[in-house]
Length: 253
Image (cartoon, rainbow, N blue to C red; front, side, top):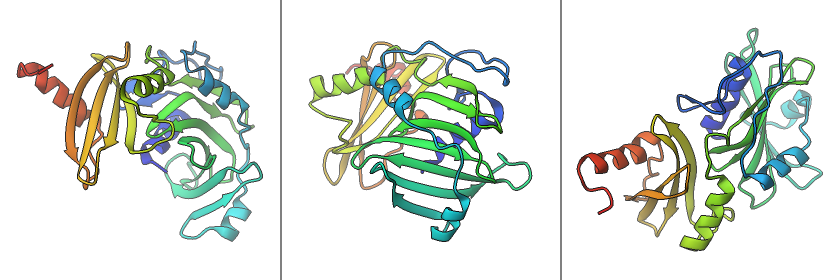
């Protein structure tokens, strides 16, 4: 499981805020005791899939311990979803520091449902991911398994993920949902706005990284890197290269 995805869930479960790379997504927060609801954008299919998914409220620790190898247990559930369960330690549980992660997806799908549980198996958080993007809403639960906080991770992006998927198909002939030749996809916000970054493998030695505007989908920057090393998809790499091109007068050339 991507450590960034775990960080998103831990952040929401511990603080009640949807934090992404130092920027709060979805606007101002409200009391932890009240359910926070935010208007959604155009990710209609994603929101529909998320609503249909039945969150498992309690983690079966006994089954995990019987079957785990090196703190990981993998199997296929009754719905045909591939499941990966993990055990780790952090400060989500004040007494033990222990927590569990349950990740489920259908074969060949890049949409993953992720649940976070405390040290005794109680649900603490849930979200859905697409590559390195947390999509839809992040949910936080109380000790009784009731939702006490919702954070819309799509809110900062007027150009929705579905818009991006259609753009890549129409303008680049690339189906990012199927994942062929896709190294990674992420998104982030800065004081200059919101952005998407897509890394596409060209061959065994090269990888193209595109930076798109999160408001209108306009391509802002493109860079090529060697793909035998995992390209740095961090905000600092792609975004800073974009800013440097503007400062140097080479933007658009």
